[in-house]
Image (cartoon, rainbow, N blue to C red; front, side, top):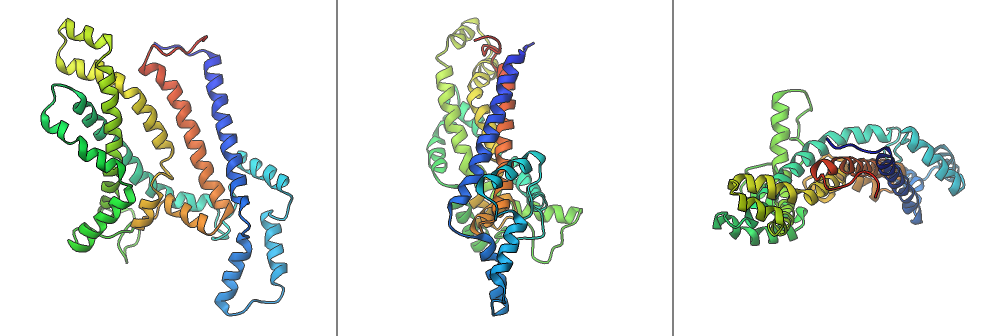
Length: 337
């Protein structure tokens, strides 16, 4: 059984904290580079709806800036921001006030996880298996001929595939709905009919994401399998007369999967933001759509909250992979140098 040293775990945990701090710091300063004032824009938008700008508009802007802490010096804003992040207090959304950032994230998170988690895992499994079969010399010729298709699909953005599917499957053939999380007039509920409605609306974005990402997994796995087949342990296994299935899965696929698993961890960490355009094109009510809308409205606190969740997810995924990697490959040392 693999034994971890305290120094190994401490170094990896320290690296995780460093990633979170660095990402959170960049997350704070980058939106500040724009000269736009989100509070002024929001209040002006509300005022123009009524047809006039009320007296004392500037005082109102200053009052809201004081309420959100945007009137303080930059270093005080940064200190308050880091303190809030440590406490898990993401504040209020500027464009959706008085809703909190956590409320909005929790509204969109189930949609994103339900769609992207399943599609990421499916594309990983399908792509890795097909990639391994494409590199295996005793596979059928049919499997090897699909490589060009994967090369093409891997180069096409998921949102382009999504638009193509919308045009043919939804608009021309009217087999599936064009977008959204559920139909117009349908009210969310814990019922079988609503679950089927959500499933029906998720098929097109799911297929688009799988087609766009499975090719990358297949190509990467094929390259690793080609490399693995030249290793001494593969030659030794063949000389021992091992069964082909054991040689393929136990010796080939297991060792070729190591870089793939690392890529999977990073894909899961970027689950929230990885397919923003697909969600936008499909009108899917997930975190990606929320992030894109928050950026267009320069909703500082909404951007801070969503990106911070992504940063923490990435750091935790990398830490977990550092703990799992020695179990997958015992040659990786966890003690000393």
